[in-house]
Structures are given as C-alpha cells and as structure tokens.
Length: 390
Ligand SMILES: [Zn+2]
Image (cartoon, rainbow, N blue to C red; front, side):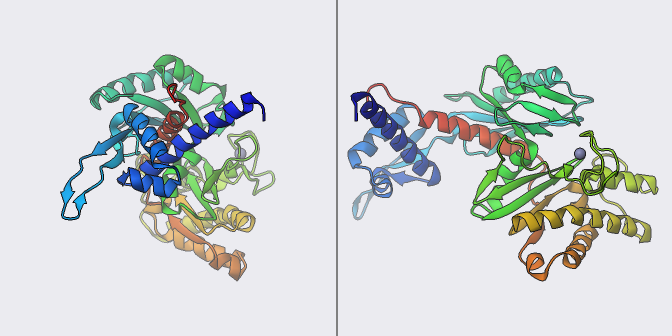
C-alpha cells in the first residue's frame, strides 16, 4: 500500500470513528465515555479525543456528574439538539407548510400559508421571508438554520431536480439551487410521499416491507424496504398514482389516461360527491353524512382504491400499508369497504399478511419529515468533518 492510500485510509477511519461515536451519542438519551468505548469497540483515548472535538464543535454537551455511595458517577454526554435548527417545507398549489425543528426533529414552530398558484419564484419569496421570521423567533444557536428540506408533490430525481410536478406546474426546476441562492443554507428537494414516509417510519422502523400511501389530489407511495425508503434507479419510484388501471380511461394531469389517481385520489372522490350533491363545504371539510347514496359513492371509490392496492400487495408483499388521507380518515366506512374488496380480490394468504391502517401522523407530517431529513444531512456533514489537529 503506498503512502497516499495509507493516509487516505487513516483519514477515512478517523471520520468513520467520529461518525460512530456521534451516532451512539444521538441514539442514547445520555451516555458516558466508558460506555461509548465499550459499545463502539474504540479505545478510551480515541473516544475521549473524539468527544473533546464534538464538544468543541458544539454538537455534544456534558451533563453534570455526582458523587454516589459507590463513588464518583461518570460524566454523562448528550447530543446538543439545540445547537441548530432545521426547516421542512411542503409545497402545494394552494398552501405552503413550513415547520422549524431542533436537530432531533422536535417541532419548535409551524406555519401554514395559503396561496393561490405557486411559481418557483413565488415559493422562494414566501419560504425565505417566512423562514427569516420563524428562525428569528427560535433565538440564537451556534449553527442557526442548518438546512431546508422541501417536500414536492411530483417527480424529483436523485440530483434533487423537480422533473415534473403537474399540480403546481413545475417542470425541470432546480428549486434547491434557487432557494439556496436566496437563503444561503443547504437545500434539498424530495418527493412529498418520501418525506411523509420519513415521519411515518417511526411506526415501523425495522419493517421488511411497508408502504405509505399519500392520497390527496394525486396518489404517491413511500416504499420502505428493510427499514429504508426505496427511491429507485433515478429517484422516481413510488409514482403509483400513474399505474394505468383503465385503458382509455379519464385524462390524468400527467398527460396519460386511465391512471389510478383519476379514480382513487381524494380529488376523484370529492368530484363524485360534488356531482351527486354531497359537496363538502370547504377543502378542509372532509366528513360526509352517511346515507344510501353517499354509501354507494364510497363503495365505488373503495373498489377503485382496492384496484391499485391489490397490485401493490402482490408486487411488494408489504406487512403494513398506511393510508394517509384526511378524507378516508374522516369517513370510517371507506376502510371497511376497502378491506371487504381486498378480501374478495386477494388470495387468503396475501390478504391476511398485510394490515391496512389509517395514518395517525399529524397534519404537517410531510414538512416534519423534510425537516428531520435536513437535520440528518447536517449531522452527517458534521460527522464527516476532518479535524486538522488530529
Ligand atoms: Zn397519470
């Protein structure tokens, strides 16, 4: 091995050790240096040196020690989650949600801004001015705003370019770069269903296969495989709303016809209800009084919903499917009708191996997932810093 690759390996190991120690500290409520050495397999001297740097960087704090009957208690260490803040933004055609969290993902402030029409330039203006104000209210911290995660209702490639978001009419927009130029902090964009899934993943962290379906104007899936979100070759996985379920069916915002979301989205359900005189008053008034006619509409809707879900179950064998839809959550009969349909259309084994659940995630879950991801990226960058004096 030549000198250069030895040097590279040495640096690489130091970064790996720093990351390992930081991950252990983040994963524990509090932990001592001795326990860190034991759980990482590193020497006490290495742990002490790394911890000293992390304290110096403001990422770890020491909690006080005490004297007990059995002697001096070790000084405990804790992740300094208030050393910075992260922001998550969810962009839609009629609303921009913004949340600000600490580096653990605890929500500090949130705001929902109603808009009409959303060009990228307008979104940059709204997000940057509101974030300025919200970040100001969080007080001073060492790193202040560490990053912004944006949840986009459309296709985002692995480089973060918004390739196509039909409902907000963005095509090939490098929104991360635009917002970064304005705010000066790292920005990334991701599909909204994936950001929602980051928030939902707490319910099934080690699940082999689970699917989170976000059903609004369109339908998108966050697919969890072995505890991680599967994004596909270029980042486009999960666009399940555009599975064709009806050749020559209704026109879809994507330009094709007969897509699943033309029948099974909330937009489709609301249209059937409005056409039959059951207009839910406002966009956020989801509950519909049950009677024979609304029951028929729900039954028809559950049939279309099942059409796509049957394919997803046969394809992925998920242990859970989480439905994130205010309209389905507000009308209990839909879930039981859906289960009846699934039982009829799946093999008994496939039907019994998958639980369909309603999401319990709070309203701004996608923005919270985006903020958590932004905090995660910041921590990852900080974990990879090479200290000069080492
Ligand atoms: Zn489509």
